[in-house]
Image (cartoon, rainbow, N blue to C red; front, side):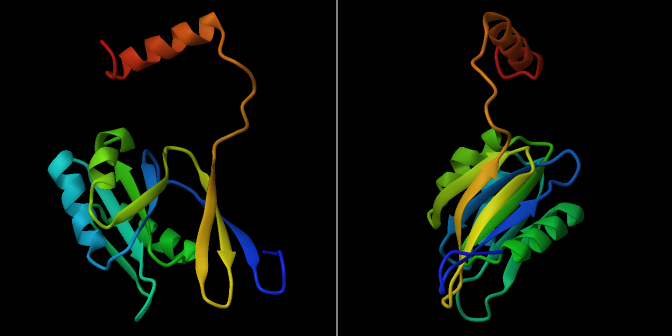
Length: 167
């Protein structure tokens, strides 16, 4: 933890993904979010495996969790508790990519925003004051190493077709 002033501490919380999974980290504003996010995922990709955790910002301040995969549900709950920021949610996904459900999740009425959707290990920058904790941002991936070449472009296009995202 790094002390920025007498009143603000900043911490980096590392989130490791369960095997063969992706994650979505976002902010929402209501206790029914876990149920609405659950419904959004199963109505968009019925065979998706997932776990959802939501950090309450008031009242008992519990991590509320749902999902249809026990491993992903436990991982989401454990990591959401590590983040510990009110109104944040974490979803671990398997057998589906974030791109397949992201628009639906963003359209859930109580979802305020998405910090990231990725298959990478992330670091969540968390600020803490006397009031509580909040997400400042997310570090997702490595620093850029250069600009794509013609060869890199061809490889990207081949990869997208290989995984079925382009004809």
